[in-house]
Image (cartoon, rainbow, N blue to C red; front, side, top):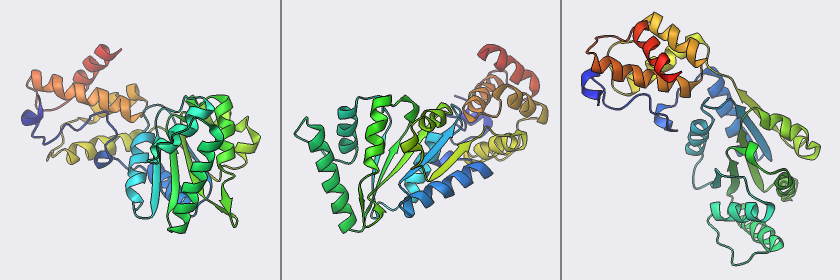
Length: 264
C-alpha cells in the first residue's frame, strides 16, 4: 500500500526469514562463522540459541546458502515435537528418503546407509533442527545416538540445534549430549546503534534513497522493541503505514508512540 508513497521497491519490514534482508550485526557474523566452521569441519553438533524474533531462522537460511549443494546433503526440520520413531522418520524424509517401514531399527539402518553413501561421494550430511526446545525429552536420546554415526574418528552427520534460550538448560541436563556440543553461540538482541543500522539497512535494501526516521523515532522503536528484530519490524511497518495515511514526510516519535499504543 505505501511503497510508492515512500519511494520503496519492496516492503522493508516483512517478518519473514528472507536472507536478502539479513542484517549482519557483529554477533550475527560471529554466529555464521561458527556454524560454517562446524559444518566444514564435521564437528558433530552445534547449538545456536536466542530470544524469539532475534533472527535465528533467517540466519539458518543464510547458513544453508553458504554451503555448496554439491558438497552437502542438508535436511531441515522445523517441527521437531515428535516421538522417537516419528522423529527418525522425519529426518529421513527431510533428506529425501521415504522408508517403506515402521521399524526404528530400519530407520537407523537406512540413515546409516545414506551417511556412508554421502561420505563415499565426499559429501557431508547436515541436519538442522529449528525450534529444538520443543523436542520431547525421550527424543533427545535419539539425537545423542545419531552422533554415534562415525567412521575413522569422523562424524558422518553434523547436527545443528536452533532454539530459544531454554534449550541451553535442556541440553545441560542431558550430560552425554551436552558433552558432544562442539560449537555454541547465543544471539542477543540488538543494541541501540545496531538498531539504527538495522532500520537504515532494511530501508536501503528496499530501495529508499533518503532518511525518513528521526533519531527520536528510532529511540522510541528501540525502547519498545528491546532490540528484537521481529518487534522492530512490526513497529516500523505500521509506522510507515500510518505515515502514508497521514501524508507525513518523516516518521517522528509521535507516530511511533501511536503505533506502540496500538500494539500494546
